Amino acid sequence: MFARSLVLAAVLVAAAPATSATIADLYNTGVDNAGVALTGNVADLHYSFAGGTAYTGGTNGNFPIGPWISDTSTTRWITPTTNAADGVNSGVYSTTFDLTGYSLLGASISGVFAADDAATVFLNGVQISGTNVGGFTFTTPFSANSGFVAGINTLSFAVLNSGGGPSGVNVSVSGVAFVPEPATWGLMIAGFGMVGYAARRRRTAVTA
Image (cartoon, rainbow, N blue to C red):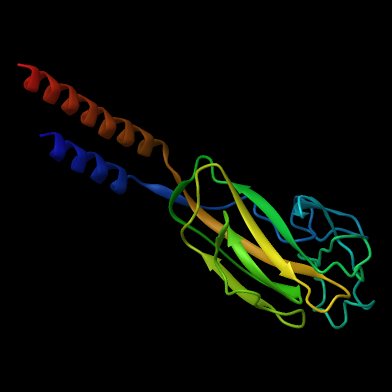
């Protein structure tokens, strides 16, 4: 009986309806809260560098954005300082997004990045790209459909600048996850209630 109740609870949860939704707080580099590119060489609002501030440190048409792919209206290069030609050899750029209230089943993220000279992509500390891949004259895709955690998730780009000179990263990313509909919570509560009831009956039967 207990095993059957566990199976039934799992079926109820799996069958419960959910709505696909965009992960709202997952941002491109160098944009404001509306996803529009920031103006000037200023602090990025959503990404950090080495645990500190990352900056929109370049301008289209000025070195190194020329050799680097161009900024757009929805993404900009970010660098360790307001001067893109800063010569920092390497470092990790990170952003976070919150999956509280989402179902982790079916969650996914995907995007593209460019980096000087290359980067390795991590989700919650687990590598999701090749090692030191990409470049600064083209974009490289990345994606993940597992490895998420409930609550705060961290997406990181470990940039390697092997030759010195300018260094930075440019990221475009989006994601989707499922939000349980109100009826889902009722089914989940009912399912787990059945498990609890069956467990109590089993303990009573064993005691008797």
